[in-house]
Length: 513
Image 1 (cartoon, rainbow, N blue to C red):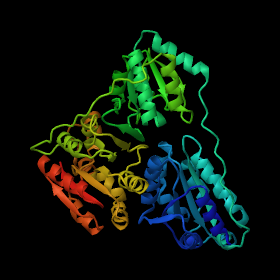
Image 2: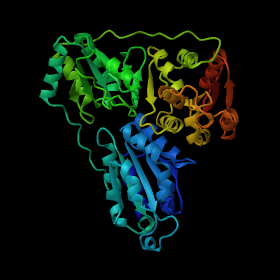
Image 3: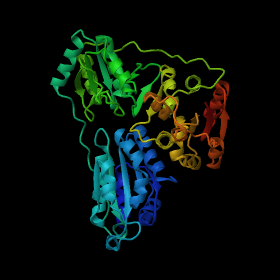
């Protein structure tokens, strides 16, 4: 047995089932090991950002890591943006990064690079294997590190000569410690804040946004009258009929400050105090307003759902809170706008859907329209590195083959990782993509207006415009093997959505706004 085979056997024993790969010469022994040893599904991405974004989406839905298999420093660098998003989403991801044979490094061949320096900013755990015999222990440690609550990115650099050397065999998985419980002082302080008679809100993140945490939060709200909030861009949120409606903290800082100003207490549960996405002159970075006190109930990585249930019990909250029933918006008609597009999707999306929202400015109306539709899982673009939507939807579909995936995708950011459509077609993944084709970087135009520039000059206008030439998403999708149509009215979107959602496999709708 060689080093690559021992690594793959150890990974299979630890529960790894999927590898999103764009390998090169230095990874061929690992490719051969995956081919020879049943247990890991290998999925090719035509760009490393597709692989890393798919691993993020897979981890969010499966709750465990997939591998990425990347070719040396330049290949890894191509995937860094979506690893940044995965780190912000607390997704468990394990990167296998091939490198030159150790004896070849001193030659400074064209692909030689400082992989450690590239990987460190997006990796919570990072190691370079030092021998073939260490590969099994290294990968066992990497998988355990990725799975450590609340989830981390782990990167292992594997020299090619160690992959082919003979070794004794694989190792057993490394046990991951239990999620720590909160202490009694945090529970008492949170209960005191809610009993003070002053307005309060629970700001929920991480596991608090799964069903167990949400139901406990609804019990607390019913007992105390507090509001329920979540981060502006949650990594994963369970939504729909039978679950409490949770409001997102507004995106722009002045709106967030206004929304939070009515609270005397902001109880943090699985998240941190909200901060502005960018720094704006005259506005603070941290958005907890003066007069509002932040109280930590449970930190990220602690037993968040257990903390909420303990607080509900401490308050004597009802075990069965009142929860909203089913409500779909009517099917819209007429002109296609972000509002009517959001209503069209909410009107027809099936129960159990997974919605990946990278709709940017066009996606916000959908969130309000879909509050009480049949139960679904909402994934959001997080981390700010655009281009995560199509890959993340791809990984979610791999993790949950029995569920429909619906990708709400801005056209500008979609062009960053268009190659994900090819992987969707190759794997016949059940994903319906709606491209919000406003043919501009609209958020940048909003930012120009916020800066007081009502009529930008020709160069500023050109740098926010995607209409010269018009991007033909129908042709692009078909070129990648994905059936596609174009919609220019709300009625057409509804009809095409029903067609795409009613058939297995990938489908794309270009919604011209």
